[in-house]
Image (cartoon, rainbow, N blue to C red; front, side, top):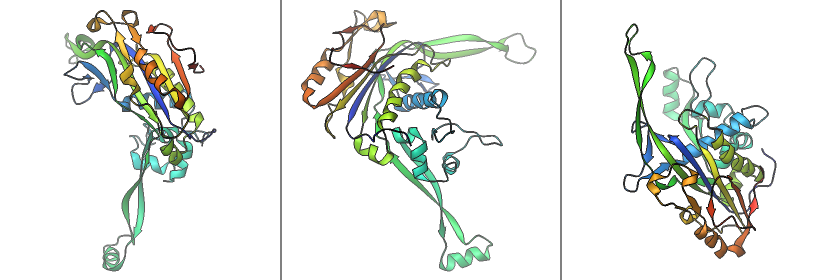
Length: 323
């Protein structure tokens, strides 16, 4: 288990990042197109995508690779003979012990999860005799699982402006058929630009069950920022973290709620935004909302990209997150 105190009070998170000429979250049921609300033109990114970004960062950069009692439960792990583990096999890596999973797996402490188990149930009466006659064991397996509600939950991420979908076609490097002159064709869908905002909440009640600590939250914040920046794949290159906010409250149970609804983009042409130079992020309503509950707030933490322009500037009583 990680060091630090178990979370005792509630917090809220705002995380904004952008992406250029790429696909922030493809829909496999729709030609892997970026998810877009047809009514508003708003780009949607699932919370699953964001959590995967954090998991991948912690696995690849922070040593949560299964060694030294530090692991990621939800990750692709191959069998020695080939193929990937399913949930049951993953649970057996920890001897199906929920306490071991919690102690070693930071993603379960953060986001919760379902641990599939196979428990054995002794057969009785006629069933037992029948199994003996059929040459079966005296015990039969019964499906079971343990579910942990994650203390850290995010809403769907949404762009703060309508986006434009581009369909790009190109030529591949190989011939369509061996020996032929004609090359294969490729096509993909990208967004010229999307400025995406996620809202999250840290629930101190659920934290008691997964033993979520202050140090885990520090790694979460690092994973959001650095994980987004280091997600360098063909469809994600160009993503940049722009603003990260964490509001810690003084008493359990209290929070402002829906902080993302207070952020707005100010631009002369919302439909022609192609980068951070084309707009300002309006923090006025957010600052006011936080100000209304100032007596309930312990600390407002933030991290901001120097290229992001805001109006007004970050309040002086907000504290910078450590790099």
